[in-house]
Image (cartoon, rainbow, N blue to C red; front, side):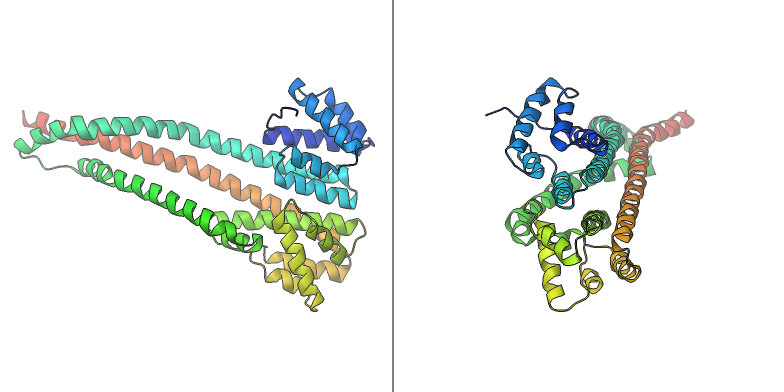
Length: 344
């Protein structure tokens, strides 16, 4: 068997983007892949050649990407694109989404890496000051009847709290891992998502992402001439994404009972409340596909804004904590020394 190299998120995004560019220029999928062989690194050429071979044998493209261990969201884009025929636009939008996620992940790494390095250095310095330097000075200050200052108390308090904090983190991780292995995995995909959107801070991000993906795929299918029921049937056939498969099945079940689509979606906590209003408005003006497409872009835009806002908040808070600890360590030692010097 051919040795496979894991594709990074950036590689997957750029591969799908280039494929979408060629498809938008009128290339058939096979010819687009043949053209890309000459633009990719040598370690990828053999994989694309295998991909072409499987494509000519009749395998669907989403299945081929699944065999190559591509991101599940990208596979979902490709799956639905093959159903409604709008490969070029779906490939370009899917690649744009995954590349933005990759950039956000890189930003987060850069924002955290330097403060994390400072935290490690500060921790070593803190241990040295608390266990070696400060006790010697403290005994001297006590013998001279000097009261501990505020910063000395801060250093000792942080030293007492740090082991407890680390134990709490380890305990929380252990509990969450145990819960995931023995309880969470056994829930249905829909129940899993219901629980995820209840998580503080992270929940709204999940909700926006699920709403975006559902809205954009449904809009593509509707614009391809399918009815809502037929589109949901395709959702139900999506074996690679059990959550959206479950969504299609659940909504169809409610529709058969005579419930309205907007009321059904309003009952799902993992979708934005505005989605049901968009559905209602789109059905009234006969432009449901366009309304959904516009709303999906709105959700993606909100997701980017929220991500950017939280990323900008993380680094200053880390720097503030590090700076406060360093200042506390220095002043815990220096202030009593100034008192001593004033006594001479």
